[in-house]
Length: 480
Length: 102
Image (cartoon, rainbow over all chains, first blue to last red; front, side, top):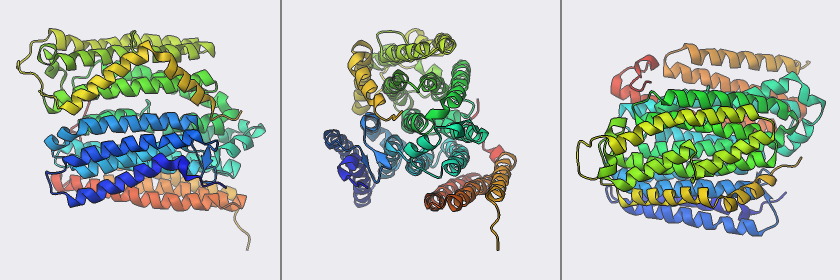
């Protein structure tokens, strides 16, 4: 029994921050809430500094072993807090322009981040479920934050109904696991299931439920139906968060739950994830080719990227497999946030969110145009970018473990994805602009574009420190 | 009085889950869909409590309590969203909510 609260310091700081924002929001007059942006931003940086004490102690589990703060969860905490910080940095003028409730936005963003941090640190089914629900319920509200916009309402109701059903499916799977093992702690579940019991058909049924439940949360095809609508209807800033945060959270929970709890049945769930990977890659990339709305196109593109990540999950029984997923998540988070910062600038402070609105962006706002080009190059997987290194590690992890065909499917899909990314790049550099004035992107959005450009290139050119970090972190959570 | 075997509880739970699942797929009113999802959650709850009794451990009971709490929060959000939509269009049939397609 240990209740070492220094290990939970980032979570505690984030909770306190959300409450502080709530109180300050009430005391500020409407229209005078710009200071909240900087309070939130500073608070997130403090929470990130709060990770430091946890790295200094030898203890790694707290709350009676339900939550662990090992290298794996620290990697993801850094990732989630960085995502939250970048979203906050880009948020101020956008919230004002769209007349979104400022305080509510930050509280929901912080709560969702908190939920995701618990998902990555949990060693117990109960805390995984609670973290997932905290992240999901706040996401439903975030999707519907544009109250006057029927599209935003529709995004919220669709996300909510699909999400609630997926939670029920996941919960039923969890109850079967509990019934089989009599335990909710992943380590003990792993020990109990390690034997003849792992061949029982009911274990397969439970795994199907769990894979479907988590597959929904990370928007893998065929559980993706809510994704395009939620992405298109939600405010662009929220879409940027959806594209990265909840997906990474679900991925972290999947990596830990399946490699520890179901290590003995790995033959079954790797097959399931391989199927999801292939379906997601082909469906995402082929459907993205027909899209005229950029946010919708990015939704399908994100489904395809989840497909690439699931290739890594398929070989997550090995350390390089887990490490390649973590590295790709890092690269994916950076390039996706960068791309969405540009999309947000063109949508809210420029012509709109259709592909045609990007015509001549290269002459109007060169930084945004070149930034978006770099992010798309990274998403396709062309060197010298983080996306290339990420795909390379996923590729080699798959090949090393005998999944050559999966690696080939991934390469084919990278080629297909050139089609829709190129459409926008062509529009930006060749298309005739309707206006000649530059897109007035706020300083915060421009800063996010610049930061993510630098990091995307850094992940491509100096990948080894990041990969070593991911590998060291990936080696920690397993016990087999 | 003899207790029913564990299999009976799990059978009821599975049937409830299936009824809820079919309800979500067949019904077109978000309210009815929400109720169907509730049935699915409670199917899982029934399984948790039955298994907890079987294993003689408290974890399942705790899990069921937490699920009830989370479900209350989730319903509050869901009803709020449905009210928001109803105020605008005076209909809550999901087939009419289709501004987003493709």
